[in-house]
Image 1: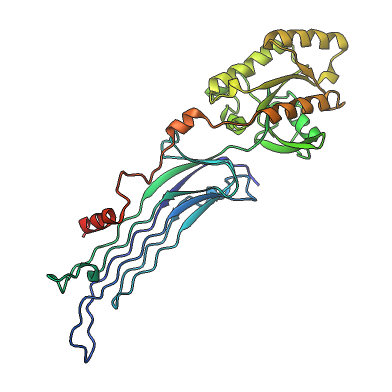
Image 2 (image 1 turned 60 degrees about the horizontal axis):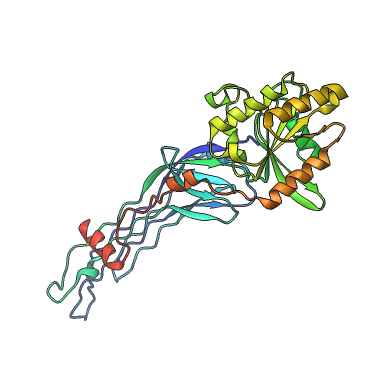
Length: 364
């Protein structure tokens, strides 16, 4: 299955059904009177996080979603049926943005989260609603209100506890394949990983999820290489594992390059707790390892770890360090995204019954 983490969709909630103009006419009944029923409410559009999905690939083949129109009112005071709702089913971790792709509408972080994106239009009143002592035979009815039409962006950000970052060929995919049951593509050329991957690691009876993303190179925030779009998949993590390969000639430069791209991307990634590890240490002798370890510690300003996914040296120590960080930290929502969050259904209208009556009558 192809991985797709962003999709554009068009939605429309259902129109309300029209009210009916009808009069009761029966043999042997002297007085009839208006008996036109109200129209039914249009269907709503919902978005829901469900189990069993890990990509937005379904929205590549269908982008238009429209809820059903409410049924029209009929005589004998028969009200129209409400229109059927439409539910967009997405993976947990999906964010819904407005058409500008910047204004956050909702964030579905857990399975079962639901949010109403667009409400259906109210049904119109039939002529039975307007009868009174001074208007005993009203010949008017309201049409139903129109539904809302929106263009939305769906953006998936994987739910993981720890994220792997580093230059291409830093050993991220090999590390993920060694400590989890994930089977990412592994080869000795840059950008082997083209899509994010997830795996579940276990250490000391504790389990946590690790996310692997394509490697970053200098200028990734400007679109160089694969770019930095996939960094969104490590925004929700509690800790980052920054791997710097012992094969690099200048490990300090490699470290600063990735840190610079994290800083340019923003969204708080530069401030996340970070564990720095010198990877692929099986490729260097003791003297080279010591020199590169010292250079890397000087660049990051604290002690680093060493590991080799091939010889499994240092793997358990790194996993325990990750587990310890995860146990003390939890992802927090982005304050900037919270400030941008809004409700597309909030139009400043009065929600009480009188308000609905006035709105309907205004459209008659």
